[in-house]
Image (cartoon, rainbow, N blue to C red; front, side, top):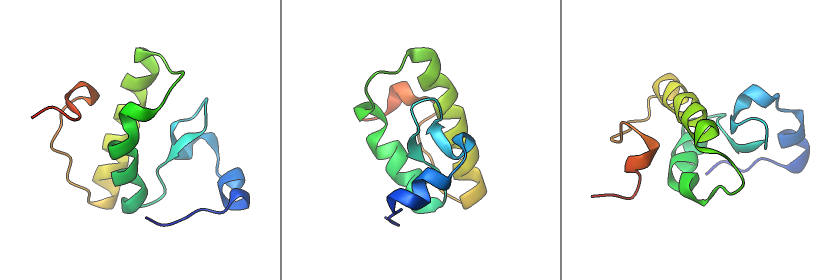
Length: 80
């Protein structure tokens, strides 16, 4: 995954995150999108409504960066 320095992360606007209010899970490139999906269920302190909105942002970023997403909802993550 591409690492962001603290300074780089601080410069990102809120819209660059899956969870903008909490500034969690940046979506700056394909690597970050894959990481956001992998860590989605580890994000604490957010509501289901925030998760729904974050998932939409992740899907949009995945499309933008050519990342294949097999799940149709965040509720499917980790289920086979």
